[in-house]
Length: 270
Image (tube, rainbow, N blue to C red; front, side):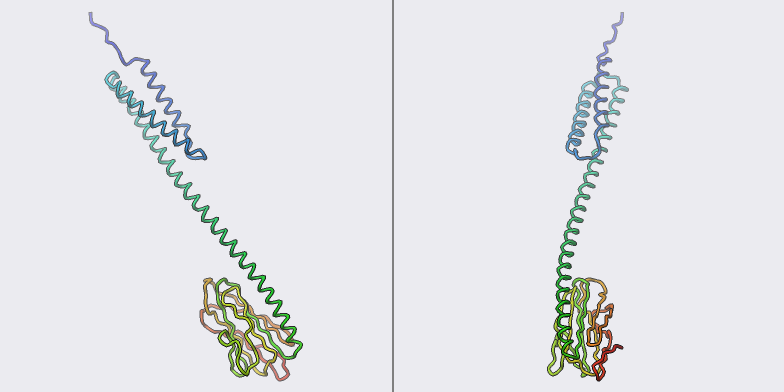
């Protein structure tokens, strides 16, 4: 009578393998992709790798006791799990890179905001200083007005870093500008010369001469990369006038307006 074959690979062993595989699959499914507990998630993935490694060891030990088709099926399932875990690891690494880049972008934006705030504070201080200077100019104007024929010409611009120069040519042809704020024998003085915008320049005289004064402007240096819009205010005995001029070319002295004084000291523009 033939002996009945002894089956080492029994139902209990299959239950053990199935249970282990189920635990691995469950652990794989519940691992989130990326949140505030990334370290714990990565540890969970490492545990998955450990479980898979143990399953491979168990399967290798039981290789000779398992029918070939079942062995290959389990081996394929383990390989599928390893591929899935590897893919998940790649996704986690990619999301970590995205998080790192996002944090770097946030830091850059915060630095830009801080820099803008500093610029705003600086410009606010400049504006306050300009207001004080304008107030002083008005006070000077009132003083000169009481003395008779006068003119105060102010030029201002608000582009940051730009240097705009005011040029005044009186009826004799004498030219007042930053290198010649005063000219011997000629009434008038360039009393303010800012070299970095936002800025103001002021020319004034208490003795307007009969004839034509040429008011000109020169964009001496441009750092803002913009075309400065320059505002002029002319104060004189019988009124005041405002003008605007946009400067497009560096170091190109352009004509803004002519101030014409008649024999009685009256002022007109052309």
